[in-house]
Length: 407
Image (cartoon, rainbow, N blue to C red):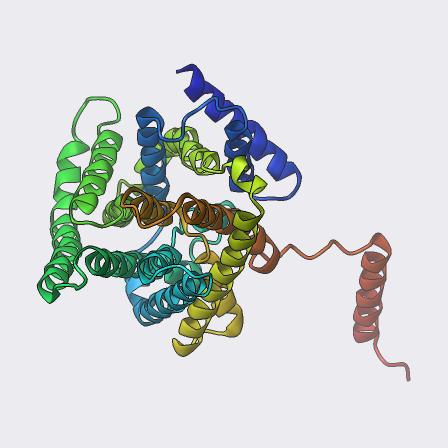
């Protein structure tokens, strides 16, 4: 409990520091985690904090789902599909190429490529939400692409594991996985949209305190569990749960009750990501060089692939750049792939550290890139003299129009 208190307090202090320096709060929360990693005060693999971080991630995407309409996601389905497909193909090819060029085996190179494919948009969404940009076409495209990207990344991981363990991949396994994932989306959304409103009408009649909020949070956690059960990232299940409540009459009640709870748990997710940073890895020059190369290639390949996909989907270059930047961070799925590579003996400690730094690097750079290239600052206020001149000019024009011509 003392550690939990320290995490949320330090996260808020660093978030305040970031805001005062005109940066998104999430940058401060990530830096808080990196700072805590210096003191070994908290173990990032401690089960208690892993659970808290998952709760925070679930609340974050659940809130995003509440603010998103399913129809708006369907409208950008073509763009999202193209962004996701090319945003997976480009990073996988370049990630594999890095491993092969530095002399690693085919198996290691395949795992590096797989780690490059996974996108975690939680950070991007947090920044966009801070600046009130959740309703834009670009944001909807990013959310739709994130769902498809996650599924594609899991397919890539399935293929890579099969090639590494068996030397081949069964088409039957891939087909079964496809049925599970597609079935989850169809069944969950179909049944959910059919029954959610009638159930909420009964729940709203309950006299117990905050029954609607408790029911909504329960659905969020259940969908998180069901998503992980079929091999999808749990946060996408939480996002789908938010979509179910987005068009209900009780949405504002749920949002109002959830917001203060999320403000406590969501920062834990980002602090725990920052805690993954290991300063010891910076003492090895080879790891530093490989990590820098990986970070640059990871950024450019994801940005380039998503940009091309957006342009093919008839988005403007500016919109394509926005979508590409938001899709840069690798996040938790990249960490899972890297951890699997290490535990299975495919990754050496050196490669694992480099991939870990790549994940952290792409996570840290994204909010800064969004702040610089995506968020448009408000126009500077005109000087008082300019205001006076403008008023004087308008007054003179008006007087000339109103003055009758002389005889």
